[in-house]
Length: 318
Image 1 (cartoon, rainbow, N blue to C red):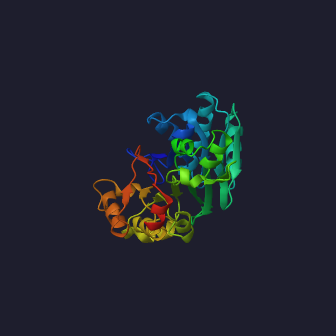
Image 2 (tube, rainbow, N blue to C red; image 1 turned 90 degrees about the vertical axis):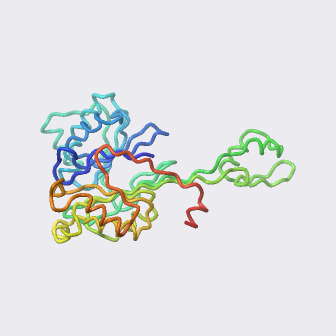
């Protein structure tokens, strides 16, 4: 699992930062999931090593333009770039109306199925490998944060040991790989867990923007490997944050601390903190690290590989 930041500015793009979008790359299934799709996202993808043809799901946090203006253009381009079998789009109420209106007035017709899912708090997608859930955040319009949880996987099955125990190859191996307990024809009881290595603990990625500090963000981010959280304003501009229902750097750090996440990556920065101004982005980083030291700042095209924790036992004792 790898995340790539395609836009890290808030509101409007700057010379060095586009507006919001993050790509979650899932190499094991040759898929890319996008989170938000601000204007120019498809251009950012072209400047990266991502393949637009691998996009299968797009999760939208809310309907503000800096998170949605690139969606229609991207969907139209996806059809021209290789005719995907289907793209599923998840987001708040009115997202489907918005896309239908864009298609109607631009006379755009997709050459592949696009399914829009209006999200509600809770699980919005699940398969054998992942669960994606969402929770409402606190913003000026309905907004949702997303949590992607990879499911735990059993450790490597020790075939050599199974052979040494005289277990015949076949369907029994499948049960043992899943950690099930089996009974052999000679009466021996074998616990599959004893023949598997350490459990591969599923990774957890959480994305929260746009929002002021709220308990829902804390609960959504609980024990996440990576929390990407907006930090639009510096702590000195907290009053602006309260007025506009955005977070400061210290609010993002407080969410990470309360949720006991492993890594905080801040994004969605106001252009007001450009080089040469009284407050700069390095100041926001210092403010956050004073509360939550394991904090970094995102920049466009930053790629971050989400590390895998070794065992369930390590998680419980950490």
